[in-house]
Length: 242
Image (cartoon, helix red, strand yellow):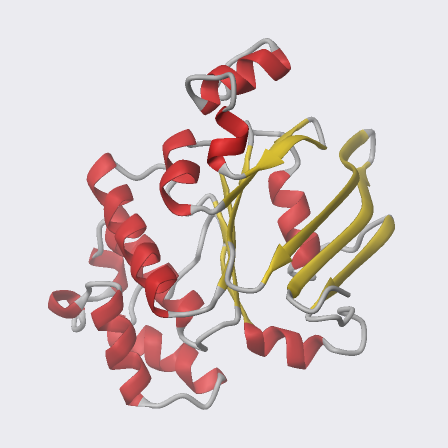
């Protein structure tokens, strides 16, 4: 393993019945890098992230996190990873603070960490609110807070702003900018929003139909193209949200 790579994916394949979701993908995520996996629905982004986070097992290929495989290292790896999946289910009758305290207890974190998270995700005014009464944007900020409660070395976010209005989306971006500036957390973010990938990530991987079409920094990807959308059209013949 490269000294600085926190995640290494080698020639990974995954199929479900008749669908080949991921086809021989390899990638490296260096420590502290924010990486976007950009692609339309059905590109294989979620399947890839679920294999990285140990929810799915590859049919073929190899994945290591900090140089270790999931098998036999589950407890150690769960402690260093923060997850926010497409749909986080909450207990509606718990308050915001109670929800965070419950998750903090899983990692032996105390009230101080709960207060830090409430501040980070901007839910100070909602700390006593029941989860059922939160708006979509507030629920997503709470989900992000839960993902960050254990001060993870690696953050995996699967389409964290899908379904949010533009204002709520920008609030989530702001939290992630703060995290990027104030820590050496590595992040993988799946998205089909071009602007999200451009705003948040140092490195962008464009996926479609289970393969990586192109990857690089934003400036590398935009060579010869006005926008990422133009690049995607040139690679696939269609727009990313079609």
